[in-house]
Image (cartoon, rainbow, N blue to C red; front, side, top):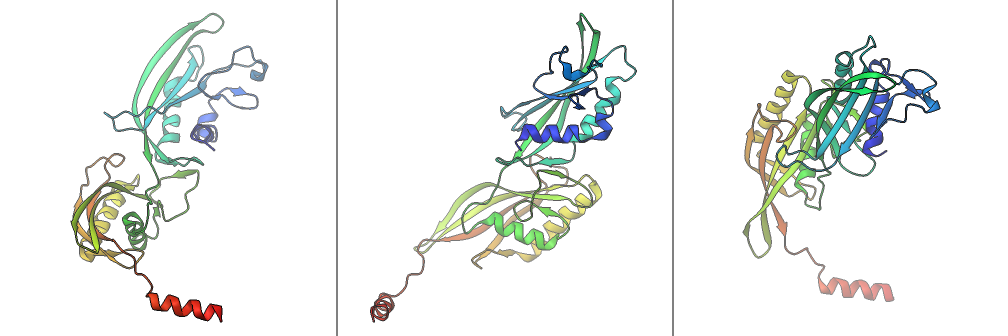
Length: 294
């Protein structure tokens, strides 16, 4: 599924939300971009309200540091008993503490960015009222690169420390993942990489990595942040896939930082890139070729 389909799946599968919505073609009145015409037979001659319309704008907002915006519009009739204020919390609940993974693309998390009231006149239905809810979309792309990979090393180390957590890059990620107290989600991001000292055999690199801990329970989240920060500080280094050491050069834990934008732990790791790979001795190659010919 793509991102648009995953949002529909998330909204339409919530019984707490759909019980308040009208029905269209046997399903809840949840639509992408725009609502179908009111004279469509799929409405079954029943009321067309309340209904939910969502729209994705993938234009990045540098000021808000978001990858795009999700607009969710809730429309009701002013003559109905159910009002938008009663349904809005259910919409927000669907998009809060959830991580969506499209088949092709990055992971996405949503953050509330504001709600506006509106009303408009319709010839056949009188006055309709509603709410426009805006959500910032934050993107978390796959961070694995090439060997030696500092992200793979940090992911593996954190997974050993927190086996009950879901570490992105180490564990299987479903298309819809709820972030819960029981199963927090951890994401490591390579912020930048700088070249340091250089010898005739090794190029030393400094990589800044931010660690995001997604957990709705603030007490448990703080404990996980402290545990990871303390263990990394005590260890001093992490073994990479080629068994070479990657040292912890700097580390900072910020319990008040923005989880979605900055993460709670920022560390700088130091590792080396070999300029030359070990080559087989020429004499060994000749002997092997002789044996093959014989």
